[in-house]
Image (cartoon, rainbow, N blue to C red; front, side, top):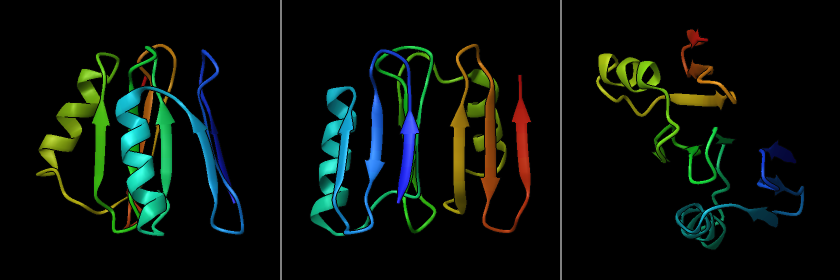
Length: 111
């Protein structure tokens, strides 16, 4: 099981039986419906400072994000790592903070 909470009533909850429930922007809804349909729940879901901002890490380490609230320094870190699909988790804070963990155990953060 897994739970992620955001402001403005956004959330993602994965249950042990493989089901999930969530509330968030329409783009996130589409992404999570695909995950559920393929029985591949995301590894992590993070909600950003604006309603439309989120970051999803998938089981294979690939990821997708959307929204105007993604910190520029996080985008720069992802680019400096050649956008590698080796992530375990990403967290976003309400004021531009972020945390990134890769499969090899390395971690980066800012804010």
